[in-house]
Length: 132
Image (spheres, rainbow, N blue to C red):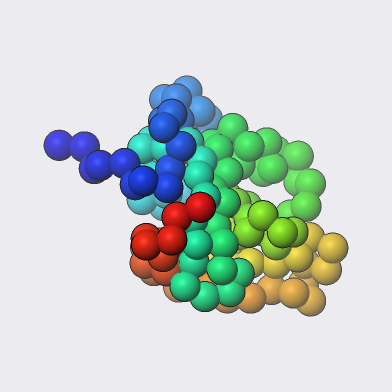
């Protein structure tokens, strides 16, 4: 039985081709991240802590970030942002499961904030009562 789609996710699911491309590029991406994209290819919701907003990038946009290296640090995988300049990413410099960090692309190293120990913990910060 498929997991129901969260109300804050886009109505369109990521294509299997897009998800396969992500997993080909970064095989160790968390399964619950891939599952989230399979339910809604992007979305926006409030978070209980800073950066207080989560804009989930589509699978295609996340893969484009990864392939281009634009606005990223080495060994981080950007999967979204806060809509105001901060990016959200898996910190692949740490052992798996990768922690979720946020950073400002203008000063990446000087602005890193640890958000959650892993993606499941990050998703627990979603404020369901106040969807965008």
